[in-house]
Length: 389
Image 1 (cartoon, helix red, strand yellow):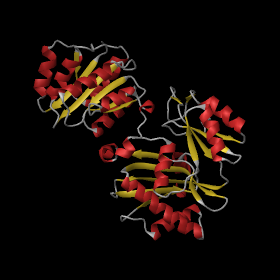
Image 2 (tube, rainbow, N blue to C red; image 1 turned 90 degrees about the vertical axis):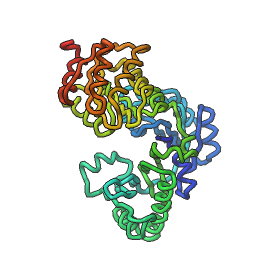
Image 3 (cartoon, rainbow, N blue to C red; image 1 turned 30 degrees about the horizontal axis):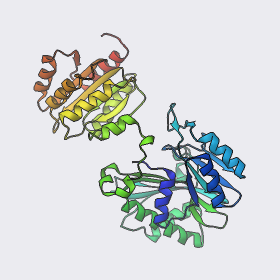
């Protein structure tokens, strides 16, 4: 689950991490009042959306007068911000964060993530803050350091190796160790999946401050993180994804034409990959999981059939815990209210495979059956183009 920058900074502050002073603004008058309350003569007006790349898209504006704050807030509130992460549709700006301006001496990149290979939390740092870390990794990989944390706390040796790459010296090395410990503690206590400070800044006074913050909480741990769960902003999420989550479905909307229903994340990724190899793009990632019910499958089909972007549906189920007859019965229930307006390709293999096929055939549904994934993807791509139907 994603939260806004201002919410992430409030969490950071609770754990002792230095952040700039700032205030939330929901209106232009709020923005001007926030700038007055913060004082000073330089402010930063930041659009609050769940997407990176806001600065490049004009969503972060430096203001040197209250009039400029008013102009920036007027321009941003209610506008649609299009970044590399939002897609062409963009995201509407409903909230602003007004921050004090600080003198920046250096900008660094720092993140924490779950290192599954080492079964630990890992830091990723680079002296090239404020840039796309993917570009840094591609062009200058020697300027990125990944440090898996071996114990429950960050050691001096681990933090010192990161501080050295960042070019810190003297008291800054000790300050960085304290910061790393605070970040690591927060990440553990709040069940973080990703914490990104880009940039982490060094002020002209030599102080480390989290100038930006992105925080993602592990969805599987939300049940024990009520305080964080209460920060969820449904306006930032796709309504279909919200609806799917209510039925225990893992659903992510994409920009292609083929709706996918699978069981298991690995199978989902393989299905999406082969669709692209066949020349089309998936319209979604939809994993029904292992303990799926007929009602949940019904809801999954409704989501796919009601999506105007979907030109064909590919059902790729490997029945282990999931029974193929549950998938078939879910389809039967769905079409009672959501007719099959697009071609459906099905590959059902495993538990109750024959029963599942029989249920669909007895209902007289025009479904095209595939024997393997390659054939299923071929059928789906052909169907989405309106060929051979």
